[in-house]
Image (cartoon, rainbow, N blue to C red):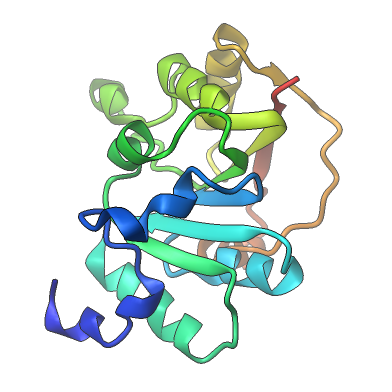
Length: 195
């Protein structure tokens, strides 16, 4: 583990230590933010909901370090972060039926056709998330890229999920979403529920 992050390790889940990851499978109040960026979104959610346990997953070291530094300034006991690849963490450490909600904010759209294979969201990935959700658990995906959101809707229709259009919940913004709002770029939402 890199030196800078060591002083925040009490809030970092080290997936190489089994006792650190036990509650990934033990909690029916687990909420995961995949690609949590610098953490502003999930930290605000954790402030609002003390009954849930939030975990932000991010692959970039610098972003996780910012998440942990922000968390150190708050008195929150219901949030942790994981440094790693979300797809690997979901496949190796999160059990079926263990999570009540997933958030994916502004996933990389990989707009060029030749890069389409790099997009994280496809029906196989969505079916895996569906299996990890508890009964009536849900998935919220937000993007500023209308083409990608339309592709996501198509992938949702191929998956076990059903799109639910009436999602009016007021959620905190990410840093990117705040920036887009200033430029009047709309944010599109796909909301799906496990029945």
